[in-house]
Length: 126
Image 1 (cartoon, rainbow, N blue to C red):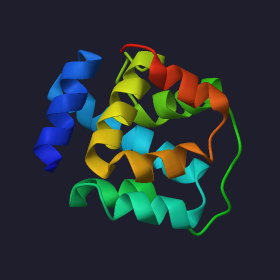
Image 2 (cartoon, rainbow, N blue to C red; image 1 turned 180 degrees about the vertical axis):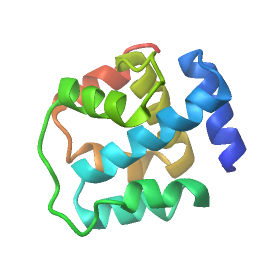
Image 3 (cartoon, helix red, strand yellow; image 1 turned 135 degrees about the horizontal axis):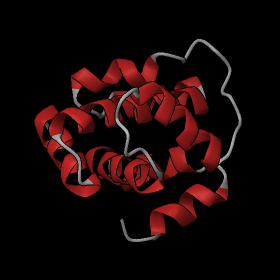
Image 4 (cartoon, rainbow, N blue to C red; image 1 turned 90 degrees about the horizontal axis):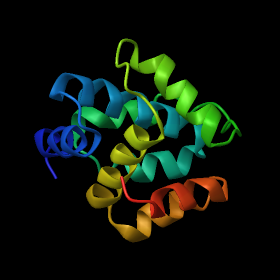
């Protein structure tokens, strides 16, 4: 998947402009990178479009930080700045697009490091 396709899919799924989708995707991936072990973040980064790789890898030198879905969404909201529509549905839009970009197996490996509420959230329709 190309960077442009990734942003377009996030934009369509989240119902935001491409500019907002870019901020949302980058903020979500950076937060995800912070939440995963360095090895798993690196594995995902190798499979996403190059402009998004650094967002996943920004925190790989630090230990993974443990927090649930509400805190995850809050961190994405803070990082996205003026992307005012950051909620669970917006984060889901990015994660569903990420799953398409990296494939089910790699995505499941990453999801295994997150609380069950992430899996439940992803089963809901965006």
